[in-house]
Image (cartoon, rainbow, N blue to C red; front, side):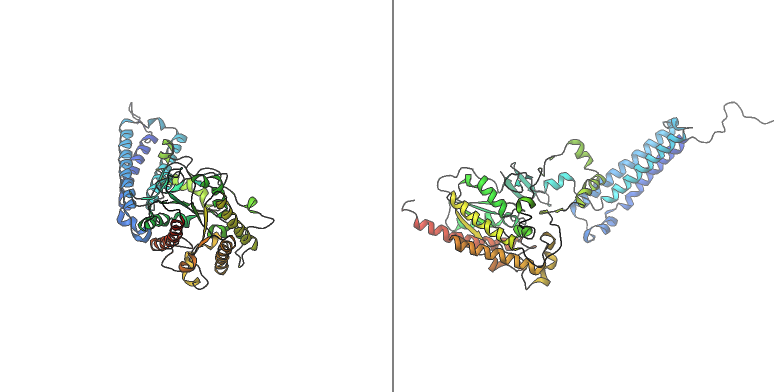
Amino acid sequence: MGGMTPGESTSPPGHGRTLSALLILFGFFCLAALIFTSPLLLEHFADDKVLDAHGLEVIRRARIEIVALGVGLILFGSACRRWGLLRFLDGRDWAAKWFLLLLTGGFLLGVSEVFFQARPIASREEQLSHSLAYDVSAFSINRLADFDQDVSDSAPGVVRAYVRNGYRGRGFPAAKPPGEIRIVILGGSFVFDTSAREEDDWPHRVETLLREEGFNGVRIINGGVPGHSSFDSIGRLVSEVHFYNPDIVLLCNAWNDIKYMNQISPEQTPLRYIRPMSRPTHEHYPPSPVLRLLDRVHLFRILAALPGMFAHYGDEGRLPEGEYSDSVSQAGIDQYTLNLRTFVDICRNFGAEPVLVTQPHLPTPENRAEVVDRIRYDWVLLSHEALCRAFQACEDADRAVAEEKGCRLIELSNPLSGRLDLFTDHVHVNGKGSREVASLVARALADDLAGRRESAPHGE
């Protein structure tokens, strides 16, 4: 009669040995994944089938992490198999199933993370380092943050813009030095000159050109803030700019005011419609060590970005809601005209010379076919023809108020609007456009400054 010898067992291999083998298998899968994370393969998923230097560096780091994970799984699985580290799972089906579920889920998440890195999403810290920092304000929809900003470009080591004390540039003393002719230029992103790097924006180009003409005491302050309309310029005038004692203040607006024009009516006044920013953009920057660690994971970045994908906001703020229109609200035009008159009066009230500037723009009635893909009509909810009429209404208001109030007008729209070689989109200029704007503004201001010099008492 057969029987078992002492110490012999008929039990099948335990869960611990099976799961140890799976750990080793997943480790080899990770090493095999190096084939699928080859730059030669992943570049087919990249934009234009080409991986830039940043993309290659991200993939290189990911491949190192894959090797580390794979080797770690193999070593851990081998240790578990040799020394029975997972033996406690033998006979515990529920625990083994949970362990297998966690192991498989972790492996799939790791594989997903690797392939998401083929099209890397910038981390929150990277996004903020490339972005202007805004703070809340009681007198405008927002303001540039007070702390020093060296906004980095996508190219490593390149500064896109310096911001000091809320103004583009390397800063200026709040108290105007004796002999300085201080000129402030207010407006939105056109004045800020978003395409220009460092101090190559057109307002600072104007300063350089004027000094080359012999006006050595001139200082230009770039007061442009992306997204600001004439409402915001007025708020900044009465709450801050007048403290800097400027001699001349230029105002160049249109696009950001057009955004609100068809939303304004006696029933929906600007007071009720326009909403300020509610919290600083860089409130949690730099991030905490925990967030910085989580931000290294692309899956976390995707989850963090999901709310923004469904928000009704864009690069220039809150998107308008409603249907596209072929007409422009007269109430909106009247409001813009009133703002211009108010701007002129406020400047004169604190002793500055007001100057209105017509804003150049890409869309014109004649070039719809050539520019339709470069214009953000969704920002204004206007047809091409209505948008052109809105720009024309703003220019007519600039000219009418300048004549009515007897103030200087600098004409940029007539010589520059519609020129495809000067614009990147609806109103933002490229390098060539920036140089053209600077030349026209410098020429107009040089005439003004020459007149001031001639009328000044001898010896001043």
